[in-house]
Length: 74
Image 1 (spheres, rainbow, N blue to C red):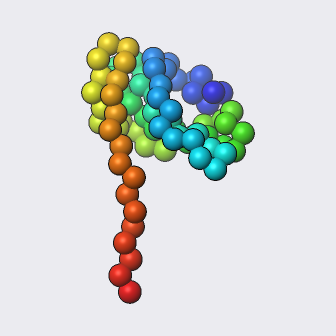
Image 2: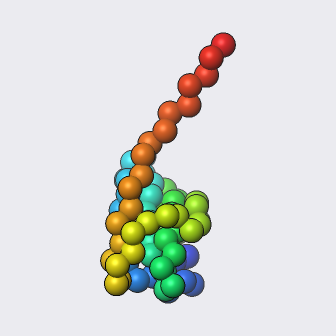
């Protein structure tokens, strides 16, 4: 995780792994949680969403995510 090495990561969860990409949640020092998406190699990550609301306890955290589909009415 080359991009994540810039930040101090205490713990991480693999949220989803589909279509040659990995979506992870990582907790950082200070209790903040950030979502990251990998490239197709799984070696490089970009920040997707910062300061996600999560229950942080010690070095661990719990995160509840829901997939949302867009409904288009024509």
